[in-house]
Image (cartoon, rainbow, N blue to C red; front, side, top):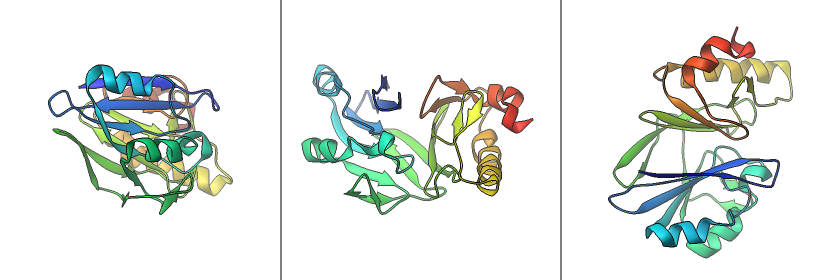
Length: 187
């Protein structure tokens, strides 16, 4: 697997590129802007940016999507019908499978920060968007939505193996065990 983290200038959001070493198929997870070195990285490794997965429809995760779609024509996977003003190619829900070459991930519904919040889990790692952060959770508009988000994170992400790495929408990566045991929102 080829893996790359991009720290974006828009709200210091994270975006991630993962690619199958065998097929050279690549997927970008979230697209708050077009990462400056994306084109060079794709060319350097001979990758085809075939897919984009959007964890939720906030501008700091979708602002670059129109340009990426125009340039690379990838399939766009998300829970919403449109993201960043772009029609979603494939709507996902709980249990949907998303493949990147020979790698297979599963969608986990994690609403609360937004109604369309989804995470994507592969063996050993997952992308949580703004559902879960190192030591925190995504902001919510009400106590009821915060309770819903906490419940979904517990049910979905904390059911993954404890050593699963969690790549978040902002900030540092973490693990299921660290967040389950130490995150104050789950104590």
